[in-house]
Image (cartoon, rainbow, N blue to C red; front, top):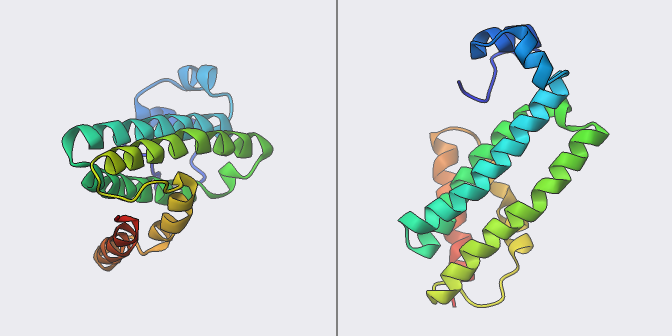
Length: 161
């Protein structure tokens, strides 16, 4: 089942039905929509940070960095689709807690690329995230994907030794 819903205000009962579980099971684990959304966000961050390790296992470091930022772009687009659900105090705490593992994933990618002499030493992972935050502002379309590629090329050229 995709993370996106067709209806942003879908009830927990409709979510339970779509997931193939009883409403009681869903409510036992997630008493509110916010609790469900925050858990989806936490699990998404876990998958995202694991994807950095997977990218490094399957690609040269700089290609892994590029691939991972495309994955991050897709994740952030979905997160933005959660809208108001991530604006409560509890949600902001969860969102803030996602920064350290995401930053650590970028650092792992940069470290591998630096060891392979593909990027210059000392690049700050937070700077990279901020620089590449433009990626998830591109349109979610073929033209947007092409723009993501061009923006990544520009950034990665700036990372090189």
